[in-house]
Image (cartoon, rainbow, N blue to C red; front, side, top):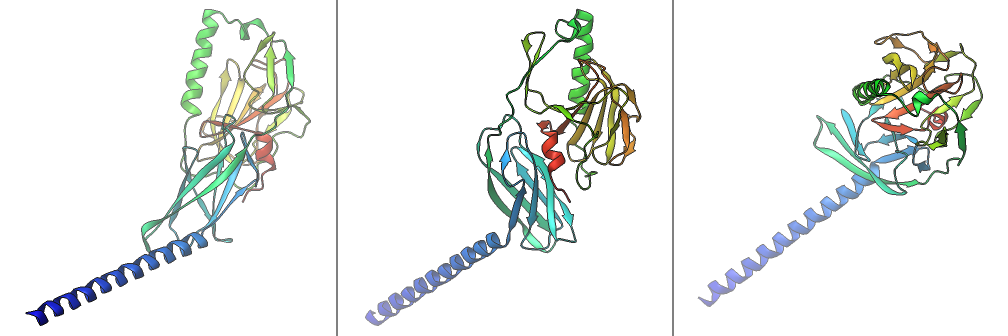
Length: 308
């Protein structure tokens, strides 16, 4: 009996030792793979310094061949495109003007028939506070834009409905390619983020870029896309919206004439209209705006951003 109990204790000890050894090896292997996986993800953002109101290009090199790469950034979903020449995935996103300074996570999920389960990775990026010019622009506009009649209020509400419908659309395929171009070769008369005052009443921050151009100046598409809207609205006047895919839109306001119609496919540099002073405008000029998944971005920063 004593010998039997001794053998049981000895075998039990060996079994425990074996289990502990296997568990330790497994934990070491998991940790090693996790370190290797993290080490082989390369994630960059352009510009290197992110601020509120800024567009951002995310570029990713994954640790394995992927069929698709998606991401989550500030509550928005990203669909990455693949550049075979550089073996890099990229997606264009943005930071809203209202985003507070701090650290925010980009969460990535890569899928492939060769890798199961999906590969995941998260990296934090710091968003700083942008210093937008504190310019107060005193402007005088027609009374109908500050004190509209009931009939005009109906037109305004109809315009809001149209914008809420069309400007919230996100088409899955990317249409833009390469850098975004300036829509007119002209001086800038007002910048993104400035404070506007109409007839003595403070308005929301200026959410676009104004070019000082005379009426009738050709207005060019900033990049390739599809004409989402081409119609007159109460405040915007003759209004063209280009859909560049994946929620990225460029908006062209106060035009005197349309050169495109809804559904047209245009290339970067193609003329979409002529500048004017229609809608809530104090005179002829071109107002352009950029929206990404409902977020207003600084057009000047988008034009400066190098893109694949």
